[in-house]
Length: 86
Picture 1 (tube, one colour):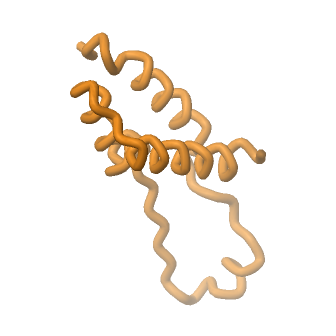
Picture 2 (cartoon, one colour; picture 1 turned 180 degrees about the vertical axis):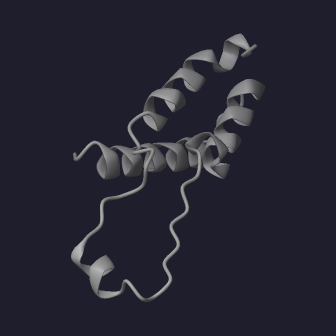
């Protein structure tokens, strides 16, 4: 069960995670040229990002620092720009 203090925040994180593709990215021309070279792509949960964890902890403690909020907003902007085509 989510604590009441972080419920809205956890819903936001879930909504942002739903924007990211689940199957990776489509093949492009560079992939075809470098097909013989090993490539590795790693997807990770937004929920597991250290920025999100730090913000959640500060939110639960009622002590959100400016640098923590700024880091979270930058991460949210990166997710939106990358996956929502903004």
